Length: 111
Image 1 (cartoon, rainbow, N blue to C red):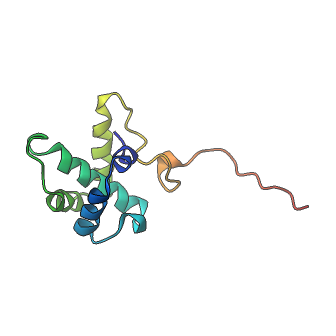
Image 2: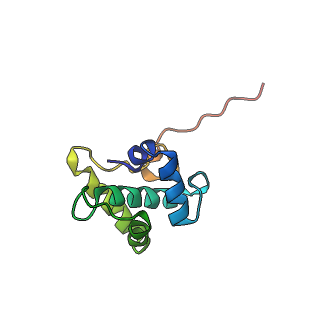
Image 3: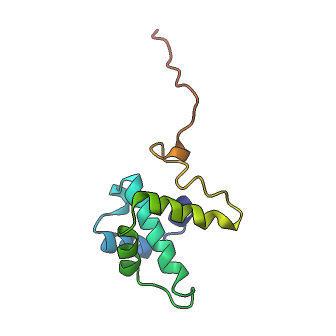
């Protein structure tokens, strides 16, 4: 499971709930904050102790806010235990390790 996977499942209601819990609109979040927010959404959906008892999003957000960035990354990696290698939390984000690629940027010569 990746943060991008959770992001792709959000409804408008989910986006509003995230904005209310975090006090930041999703479209204005940094990639770090977005990864935290998607962790809170997934924690909320997974529930305590299971999906039959969801955790309120503000409570899940408070839990994620107490984590260090390293703990958030480790939490996401643990979510990958279902067959996903878990190392690409936000693969399309160039500021994340997974979003970087090692190819050189080649600029076009000026004409």
